[in-house]
Amino acid sequence: MIFSPIKVLTVATLVFLADSSFSQYTYYKPTEGFGIEVSLSNTNLKRMPMYRNSIASLAVIGDNIIGGTAADEKLAPYLFVASLNKKELIELKDLNEVVKGQRSIQSGFFKGKNNTLFAGTIANKLENGTTGSGHILQVNIGTNANISITDLGTPVRGEGVNAITGDEKANMLYGITYPSGIFFSYNIASKTFKTYKEVAPTKAQFDTLVNEYHEKPEEFLSSSLAVDNKGLVYGSRAINKVFYFNPSDESFHTVSDLPEVWGRRTLGRVDAWTKSSDGSLYGGNGGDGQLFQLDASTNNVKNLGKPIMMNRLRSMCFGANGKLYGIAGALPGYAHLFSYEPKNEGFKDLGNPQFILKAPGIEQGIEWRGFQLRTITASEDGKYIVMGEDEALSQLLIFPVGD
Image (cartoon, rainbow, N blue to C red; front, side, top):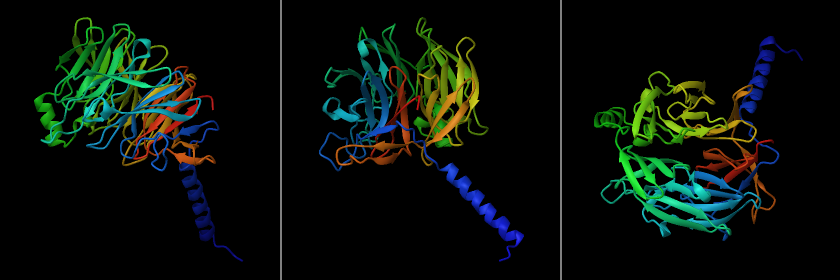
């Protein structure tokens, strides 16, 4: 049989493309990675129902993984506790039993003194179409993993809580409201709120962003805040700016632009912050998905690049190995897990995790793929990375950093 050069070239090209396509769609499958089932409707075990289980906030205290969810409109979120060692959901609490009318706990958790957690909520819309009032929650986890929730009140009536952080030494919380972007503080000892409008979008900015650029507040408000080692509180403001709040004199300072892609400046906002062991702040620009480092001594922003081609950089944390792990990308594409090692490796796009999920009824295990990831955190010793999905049926996905 005689093969023409064109046919040989065609076959070789197809083989190359097939191999390239396969390499693009391999999954991250660490040997010791595993999933914890927290939401499947085909069981009578403790599970969260559909459309109320998008895992929006995560923290780890000892063996306990604590999560807060986001729900579809008119539904209520959950707080839950899962065990790292047992690899199972062990406690669950419907937030509607404590604070009615809330839709999500998406602010992230701040861990204060005595392992007390704090979070903020966004409420469902009222009958007139306006947003209801969000609340600050104090969450305590008992020795048997029971969940105790205290309602600390509303920072601003008719506003939700978009982001929260705190300073354990000062015994203070700080946050950004939704949809107006009002900055607030909460004194944990005196139980008092104080609000500031200095970094909220002006009426002109708000009108331009919403009416001219057709953006929603979640597309230009800071989704995360961070406190540096000096007690300064960092966030982002419209349009595409980094600011810090100095609690000592209650002053605000706009210090730098966020990294940007030409023509997309109005989408710039901080999606996530994390702090390294040396106190350096790393942030993610939600508009275009760049990772950046903030030099706290000069307040300069260094653009470290894009982990993947899509926008969003939703959540980040550091592992015990010194690597930064993060969630990049979102709908309409797939989210990717990535790592960043500052000195040698740089970025690694790890793609979609595919971990074994075992639970009663599926003891043989199934391979669960995380296509829509929302949040990520590390265990207290940094040896485990815990991810939460953003799906109608969301699970926890966990792996040891040395794997």
